[in-house]
Length: 421
Image (cartoon, rainbow, N blue to C red; front, top):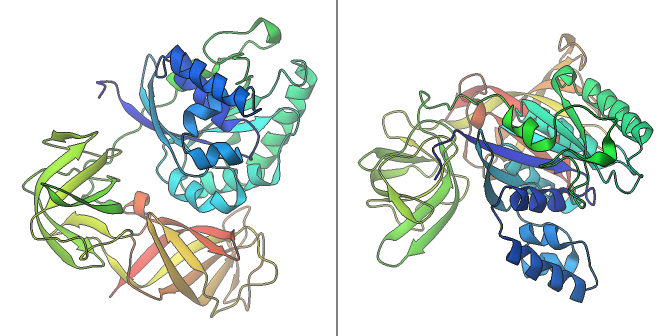
């Protein structure tokens, strides 16, 4: 553990734009992965006829991913810069892994958007930027990658930059704050050291930009909210729920409640990185053991909170959503799957209350008959089975969600108010 402030950093962007290579390069340049490990990956990559994938291999350490050459799960890796210690949430770019991207981005404070110089803004670049904004990522660093492929052309860089700026404006990201950096993750240009190949660029290099990210204020004064990712049985300890603390603190001796499973007890031990700790706070990935709570009592998607201020469980909730893509129209009665923190629950849109002007956020129409791609709306939602979710005005970390159907992200949104059951 480091005594520097902590940041969760999402690496987002289209498949094949070089996210994994960039992550591997960052870990290598900050000394988080020793040279000999990279060498080993290099040999393995060459044997498989994938020379140049060695940095990507640092992240994709699942054998299956190597065979396919794509990132599947969200790998957590850590590295230190002069200012921060970062946990990388490597968000897969591949279509079928968008839901991992959703759980990943909702855990991140800031993000690096990787856009390949030879390809520009691709469909997933749009989707990821949109999700990042809806899920509350504040600062974007745009890494224009693969500059080596376009011979370090300043013109190409400027074209891609212009394209990304347009995209940020469309989804109302504060585009003025975004930092653009021409890089080559493969060659190492402008990542830890300034590159001679881009002598026309005078801005910050990637590690400098990461160092100058604003410090995040940890939401420790909010009540404890800890969405459960998995529940393990560990011999000698018993049932160990695992998850990332979104808000508040968790200490041994706390009385906690799991919702919507509605069980609880006293926390016996809290572990981080296989070491017992006497307190854990926002952003910490923890495993903990609760007296009297068994493996079958709780499940992924439950939220753990204080027994005297338990997580709310929605009978219905009002939400603001933006429809990203839908082949036809969405009407009342539509029941897609909502992904909120670690929960995935089918929910029915009971009513479409208002259609909003996506550019200004003003009400454009009351009680419209339908909404379609590109529309923003306020809707009333009824979960088909118990779902713990919070108003984003009170606990933003548990107030955002994505809506998926037919294998794609249909919409994303935030909770305005919860009608508790």
